[in-house]
Amino acid sequence: MTSSRILFLITISFLNYGQMRLDKTVADYSTKKAISFAHVVSRKHPQNGSLTNEDGRFVLYLRNPYDSIEIST
Image 1 (spheres, one colour):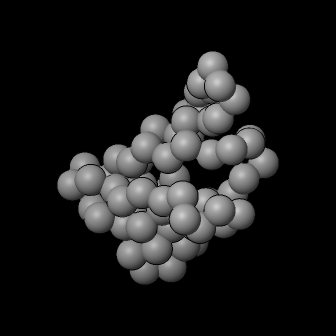
Image 2 (cartoon, rainbow, N blue to C red):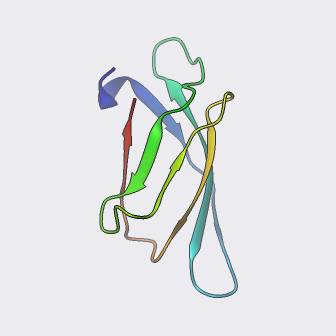
Image 3 (cartoon, one colour):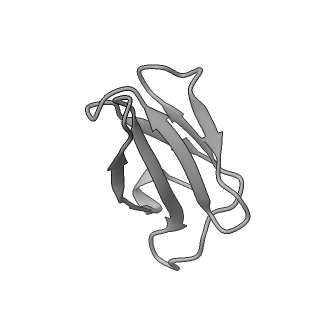
């Protein structure tokens, strides 16, 4: 599945200690169905990653709001 076919819904909240918490859902762009067990990692800090659950949701903490993420299935 290509990254152009992934719909990434974004809601950002900041934590008290300066990290950014992403609590998101990864879904297929055309079908809008959740993508389970996709890998989500910070591009600047690849050791910082998460997996989506069976509903396509994940939580990831980023060090600053300019970090980007990479999603792979």
